[in-house]
Image (cartoon, rainbow, N blue to C red; front, side, top):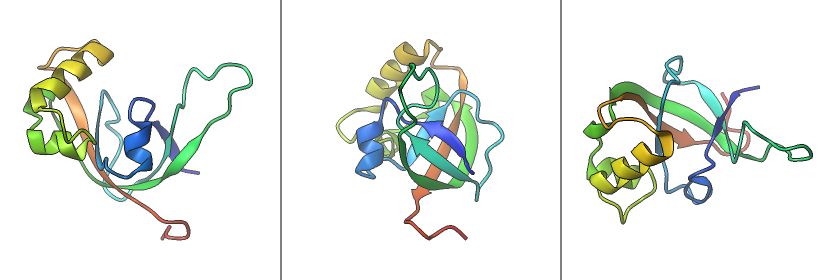
Length: 118
């Protein structure tokens, strides 16, 4: 079974497939070709809550870069076509409590259809 990855802040973007890039603190072990299961929420489930699987993705590329390296084009790939790089960076800094200079993992992926696992 593939490892789960949470898209709790971008569930709608994942569901409508407008998101093909995500940024994470950590996730240094990923490599192109890995299969990962997108989920609404993976950790901190309350008693009675169940894991909601959103879909299987295949990792296309992984690289480390400072958060401040994000571009407007990448913000669109993150599922926010109406935000600027500065808007996204401010949002990420506040939500994740990090510095814009912090190194993060930029993960690009593609959505898989049922039965597409090789």
